[in-house]
Length: 515
Ligand code: XUL
Image 1 (cartoon, rainbow, N blue to C red):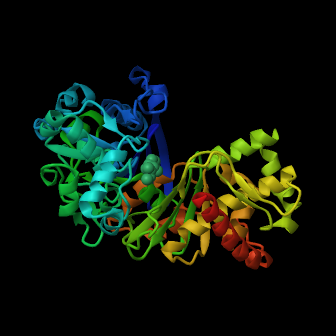
Image 2: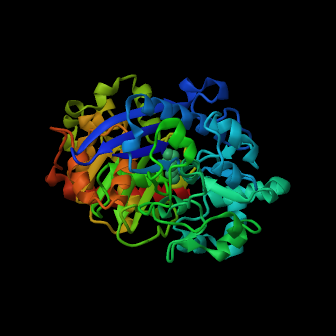
Image 3: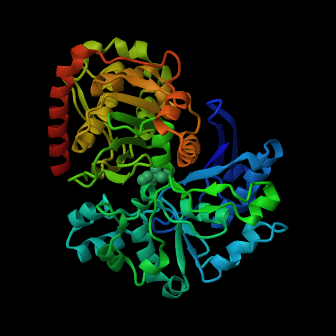
């Protein structure tokens, strides 16, 4: 049996996989807000941070780990699990002092993880991916490297506020003593893996690429970036590694408390996005995942570490080998819901039938679909900009906003040079056939939706299986199948219209940003 864990922003989840039967045996989850109310973090982070700071309490993640293993061991014989892999919310970091390694290796199963590891934190809280407090540090790192293009060429992304390097720099500047007392820095992913193994486990290539510290050419920490970030940083990081190569076995704490086998192998954990790429069955170039959530994300496997010349997209390691892109669009559901409220309609107005009435106007009315500041492209929009050739009826406004969202995605993913053969659509709005058809039409590629509830935890379980020599692609064919009847084909007669619309959209965007 293989176990996959995902420590996300709001919950810690587990998927147990039996490759012999090709079945998911069980799924469990601990919700930080509901199950651990004492941390007063209803959405998994500490509310009320100032100056853009968003932190979480790493002790909450440890309590969640104890709770989760308690739940799984109640209905599963954990001694049958041979490999554990996992993923974590990307970019978040945990700071540990000189007692960490020794304490990890000698944990008492009679006590909780959090009570024993609490004294080993050199920083009480962990900055997470929602933190935007490091604008100055991003500028300093870029200046030290001679410009943001150099940071991007080396690390796969320009210096980004939420990325770990700028966060480490801010800590070293604001609390030099705390930084000095830090002997080891972990990502959320590698922290959880280390606790399971009872010793520090490497950061993996996939998640490590979200730090502005890993050189994608040789997959080693980049000396120039380390130096520009904080003093003696290389000593605080283990060499990065592949998530497919186990680095340890379950610690005696988990063996005696929850019944894991002492030979159960622990893989380096990866980021939630790389794990989702696996869980969505999209590790082969040409398959694209579009996730429609609060923010929309676009991610896809890439054969080479190509970087976005405009600096909006990121490059992470693909757990199956090679690389993946991730592009984040802040105005996802935010914009869809703002228009829905503007028009006082419900979601059925976005369904296929309502949208099919406007097919004759496809690509002829343009909307820059931003109701608030956007990161792709970076701009302080405060409302949508439109260029309509027809009277803007509610139906046309809906079609045009959605087209604008997907034209913006197509425009800002072109740098990858990937020929989109199929799109896996996921996230809340993906169930809507009208929206899904528009994605197919704008990208001129078939769209499928999968039945997967937690693609990152499933991806982690598949990584655990692959680390034991199972063929990942074959497993994906069995476990990452599209839901019946979810396939939508593009209307090919719209191909030319959307090519023209893409050019017009690009021009309107440029004029708006430059005005
Ligand atoms: C990716 C990112 C988020 C986190 C949280 O760059 O910041 O997707 O991984 O899930």
